[in-house]
Image (cartoon, rainbow, N blue to C red; front, side, top):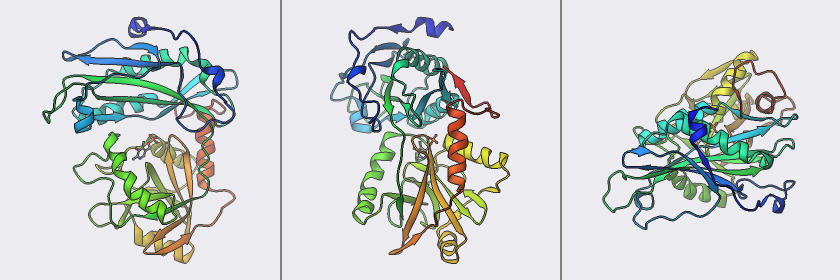
Length: 354
Ligand SMILES: *Cc1c(COP(=O)(O)O)cnc(C)c1O
């Protein structure tokens, strides 16, 4: 234990809610553990994090989060192995990205030890909440927002950094049918698409609802300027397989630098799968679907690891993708899960013991 971990105060919940939870039927992110981490930024500095019972928080109506949306988050998971040990997957990358998001939204950066040691202290306390069954995990939601008050449109003077935990079952997305978006945009050059800023997701809801009304599950985002380049799949990065080559777009202002995405690129290289990081045009994907060379499309992100796409719609036409027995999507998912659950050697050094 280092200095920070020693300083974190823990106020324990008087009773646990764990007996009321049906661990065999967990949905995603709707049940929360007994405790949460809270850290306040006041008078120009972060105070020492505290762990307290999970409970509502009180905010001034003029808190800037409500008016100007200074708010960011991360998504991570804790995994329990067969021996009962707890693991994180590339958590330092989440911390780095959190601060990249913070900077873009004029939120003060959080020190690494507050984020990592705070999280580990919380996880040790909530160890019994980490499901052990295949595919289940404890979803981790670090977030940070402007709690400071005032209607003046400028950065707040007070912030809260919090972490809440939600036990979650294996994420089966089923057959995902997606619509290539030709009107709305998720992000733009010079914008905040690379940050996990709350408003980015609010902005996606409406176009996604329109797609759902048309019978699709999700939107494939294209570039804001021409809608000619495929960029992301909902709130996931996207991979396209044409013949045997795996392709994903380069990260940019508009494309979020996903940890699952970069892990898949490294695993593909390790497996000798040809992988290209380059722009993907809609035309190229439609042509490949027509001539049969489009083998797979899948989303990549922490929640589902990979989410295979069964069909996509474009210009009022639907294109089905083949069902492959030995898909790259499946291979990638298995390699990542085996590392996350400490079932395979971690040649990359991604696993972090709690
Ligand atoms: C979080 C997120 C991803 C996936 O990132 P991971 O680190 O793999 O979970 C991709 N795209 C968007 C827009 C996201 O918010």
